[in-house]
Length: 639
Image 1: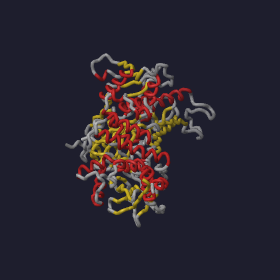
Image 2 (image 1 turned 180 degrees about the vertical axis):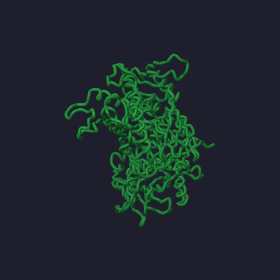
Image 3 (image 1 turned 90 degrees about the horizontal axis):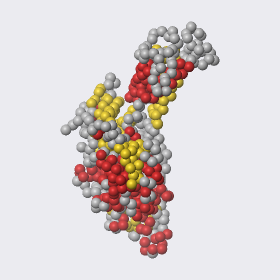
Image 4 (image 1 turned 60 degrees about the vertical axis):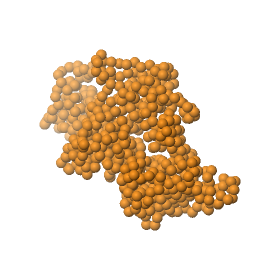
């Protein structure tokens, strides 16, 4: 079984909403004539039900709106209202949103029609199965020649109405009516903090345009017109770059097109960006859907505190189909491919190939520029209802640049033969979380704001104390040059040893949106030789046991390598990095401090944003990328 759709599970404690209904001006009848209809403004209202209490665990699901108009030009609103509301909710990191594909899966399982005409009790059952706590249902109708859109919010647990919203306007201003309805529904939902609604203004118009274009693209896709569908999805993303449904549809469509089709441009493509769109498609083919992952069964370890650690082996490789599609495009564009080989027949020895996309320098620069955006690989544990239980990534290894990275402004290196065997470590899980694991999913996300820093401070622990006869510099004097040299070498070893785990356990308390972690480790070293006097000790925990464990282990590993590669007399390395004198000295812990000491304070800090993860994806749909295995509560693969 395979899992698709990115997911983040983020629950915040939200207070009860308090919404004041706004009175709307009366809407005149259409009998007043077309000129009067055009001058009528859209009216809208929103009202919270008396005594309604939103659940503290807020997970939103939007069902298809019921189309009561039977007007072909308004058919897009059936799905379009869903996509507009989901896109608006997804902008708020305090909310968890169920993707439309997850709802469609539940509808298929329950044999419901996707018309939107679902009784309240059935809707509540669908919402509960999709993992939602609040449902949004609605309808689109024509009343006295005016368009009317209604919505209501249902509490899944109690089956009660939490609030209602409506918008009404002239038939020649459908976009404004739809935007007003979105704005009013968002007003009813507790935001968990400041959140700017974009349903109005230029951003609001883009929201509507994206929903219409995405609906048109899905229709073309069902008809087998994949290239035309691709153009519509690109049009939707141009109108609203963060539109979740359009982004997902775009990625799937790019993956299913040949290299020749990816180079086509039609009227829509020319109007939006032409050549830049072509480059974007090729980048998406390599980065968004170009990675294959083989996930092995997980092994579980029970810690002394009762928590569980899951270790899941995984192997990554660049998909041959993605490389072939790009190679086909390069040949068509008049570019060049220079393959490197280690002289062996093994495919892994074909370590890389240098690619110049085309004969046009401007296209090559754009290709390299877009590929230079940092992208990280994430492995997610998913529950039965599609929620993300935990996320893991390795800082140094799990980056797409391992396979695809610019060499300069004109060339890109593709490591098409590289296979990375790694392991995901999900530490600190509860037995209940482990029991709820249904499968695992690999995704690749752009992370332009992430960074890891390491700060090393060296001090004399005896500074300011009465002289006890230890060998240390006199006040006002600098440390011996050998100290400086050795510390510089140690810093390099620390940077090599530290590979912080990027982890999330969002479905619970204590989640930080920026995922910032800071741990401080201290150690005592001999001033005269590269050896430990006192082993690494965690002075300031980060709150993440696995992060702290890796920090302490990194100091211990770096100290061992420092001792093994640095001469005991403190002489510097040669330019080639070799030791100039003496044999390597093993690290040791000394009881005395005859030679004097230096105190090391190492701060490990990780700042990482995981974008667009507050979405519950579908479970059980077939997808080549990110194959998943269902897991039993013991962590072993189930049949």
